[in-house]
Amino acid sequence: QVQLQESGPGLVQPSETLSLTCTVSGYSISSGDYWGWIRQPPGKGLEWIGNIYHDGNTYDNPSLKSRVTISVDTSNNQFSLKLGSVTAADTAVYYCARFTSSGWSEYWGQGTLVTVSS
Amino acid sequence: EIVLTQSPATLSVSPGERVTLSCRASQSFSSNLAWYQQKPGQAPRLLINRASTRATGIPARFSGSGSGTEFTLTISSLQSEDFAVYYCQQYNDWPYTFGQGTKLEIK
Image 1 (cartoon, chains in turn red, purple):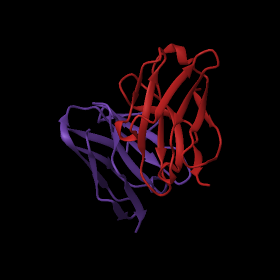
Image 2 (image 1 turned 30 degrees about the vertical axis):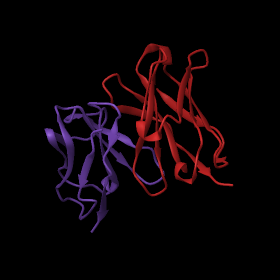
Image 3 (image 1 turned 90 degrees about the vertical axis):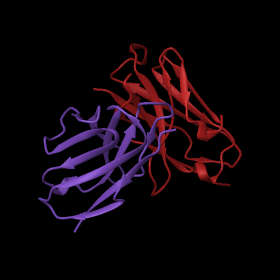
């Protein structure tokens, strides 16, 4: 059974870098598929942030203006998100998910709320 | 970027009713569309992929259809557990995008 779990600070200072890690169990990241991040501001809809393939190829949302870095650590079966220069607008629940090579996601983490505030 | 517009934003319905949710795309594509259900405090749950294929374990009352710029999700007979927010997602092109959601509420 595939499970994903986000971890990281729940509070980030404005202008700093948000860092989250997703730990995958029940499936090896090296086996394939895409691994991605989605966020949801409080009371709002879903926004795709970016995906990474097990070989390290990444795709991210241009709306985030190159602030995103996604990396993979196959030895620990984890992948990570860094979002730089955060503002209050980056306050959201952040989800990690497994995307099929076709593009939909059947497995999601439970989500973690990150608040940007001083 | 492909913009997805869902309508209506909110739908008030009674259990047992049949409902159809719409997802309109700003550009035409074939069937690279998924539907998700989200309940408060939970992660989204995949319902439909490839526009019309039910995901594993999804009841037959959920069906998807469409291609081009018009896609629909139909729930044939609403159950109490179906009251939630529904999102469409396109994966035809990067960046992946979601619609803004349709909330089903109890009338």
